[in-house]
Image 1 (cartoon, rainbow, N blue to C red):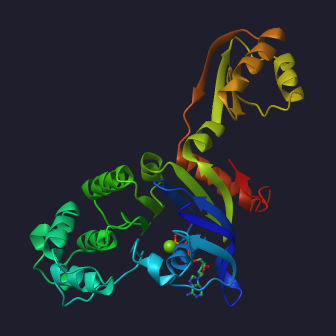
Image 2: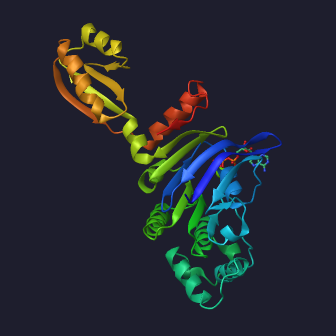
Image 3: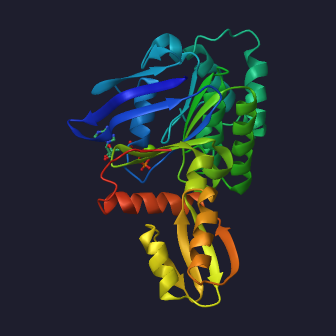
Length: 311
Ligand SMILES: Nc1ncnc2c1ncn2[C@@H]1O[C@H](COP(=O)(O)OP(=O)(O)OP(=O)(O)O)[C@@H](O)[C@H]1O
Ligand SMILES: [Mg+2]
């Protein structure tokens, strides 16, 4: 595992932060870490990169305890709110960061040129950062995170300031990193992007992880079966209810949440055996945003009660 935490907690005088986080991220995964504002996402990243000391619990990153200086050489980090030295140019900043990483400075100009090109700001490399737009600064932040050719990259909302083209560029960069076997830990509020980019996700609310696992599984588990009948009779509804199904009726269509397609034949059978005439049946596509909002709402209504949902 590239990241492994057990009951990792970081609070600030007992408040806020993230609590009791037990997560595993495997090599080469693109891991999406989602949660509402103030949920504890950035705190966890800062703890994993060694900027915050854990309050309790433990964590390993690249097989070393969190905060280990040696491991940090192989970690790239794009913080969510950063301010680079305004008076430096992009080129100078990357050289400076290369020295902080204690990188071999031979060939560094080639590496910085390559990264500024990948991140789409090579034309501005001799311009002072103080004159950069916020999207340009974010692109530079990404270049800096990729500078040490990391094995693991933490990106805390890498596309928050980017235009649609920039967001696509970042998606492509993440895809390339994945193809090179680099592990990416991504915080993002852009759930459509997470859906396109990540293979694993965890959802955090109020400091606690409320779900984690593969994105495929999460999407599959949150499907709805839609069945259009000739007419909706009580016998059908009662039979489905007896089987513990949650059914909502929209005109002549029944909407039934399912956890997997293996449940479909049984539902169809129950309806047919109770006199229902099925004219149409299909699963509706859910998106990550609906799933996310559903889980957060459930958690806040108390039914989730911080129970981690292992997928
Ligand atoms: N340095 C700090 N001192 C005190 N409290 C803090 C500190 N940093 C974070 N917190 C608190 O910890 C909680 C989690 O904050 P965090 O920045 O991790 O949230 P987040 O999930 O990254 O939110 P966002 O989506 O807004 O970036 C919040 O309640 C915040 O107020
Ligand atoms: Mg944050």
